[in-house]
Image 1 (cartoon, one colour):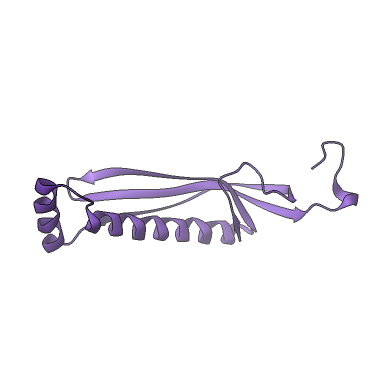
Image 2 (spheres, rainbow, N blue to C red; image 1 turned 120 degrees about the horizontal axis):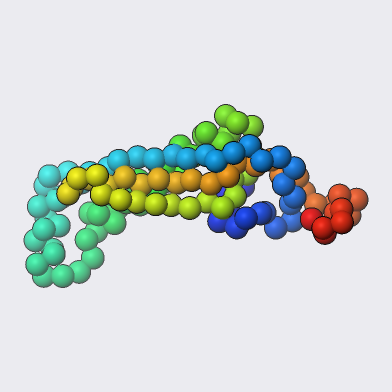
Length: 116
């Protein structure tokens, strides 16, 4: 599956738009790690526990988005974006969303008037 933040896929043309697809997850850091993070906030520096949690959440949200796109019959998702927000003081939601499409490679015979 091709995935891009661009509105189209270079070298391909969109032949069918299947709709918006999304995936989300809500994650929290374990209590012990959360306590260490509070201490790190006092002295400064990267909050590695939260960095790891958000990285894992983004990967899970993207995986769920791609599963939805595959169920629709897409072979690409364009205009992919990520959004996040707090659900509680210790948990965050991460959402991935984009447009599921069917693309095919551009060949000399398929360029059409627009050059796509």
